Image 1 (cartoon, rainbow, N blue to C red):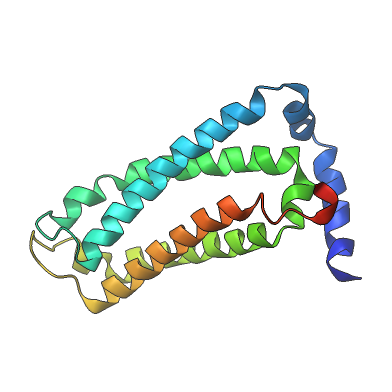
Image 2 (image 1 turned 180 degrees about the vertical axis):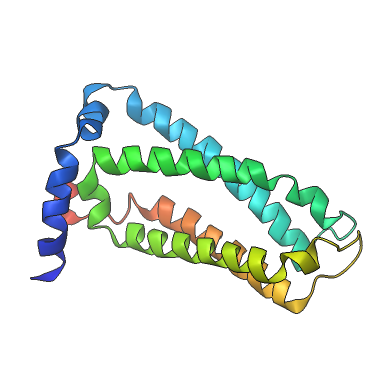
Length: 170
């Protein structure tokens, strides 16, 4: 049956939704969502990268919790990106469903989410008490290194979406 046999019925369903029709009915939806997506990405990556880099040892003079206060902005950015991403997918499911870069992006998003859950359940209590100038434990550095790598991968895959469109999309 292959990949297409699984995806095609789902793609047809997405095309039948009101969201798909809405994306195609207004010329401003896509550029507005692109702008919001970029702003959300800036909030998400900016806050998470600053925090991860501090735990990894960059800018040790800054207390870890001072940068952790930015994480709610990152969560808000993620929510904006999730919602605009749903709009993008709903508008052109064929551009995403068959796209290798999109699939890798989804895997990296899941990895980043699981990694964040591991960080907050296993190591955060050790990191939150770090004073300015202190070095984080190796486990914290490992987890935040994976976080930073996963989010950089998400950024790269998002950019590569347009380069790896399925042949029938061009």
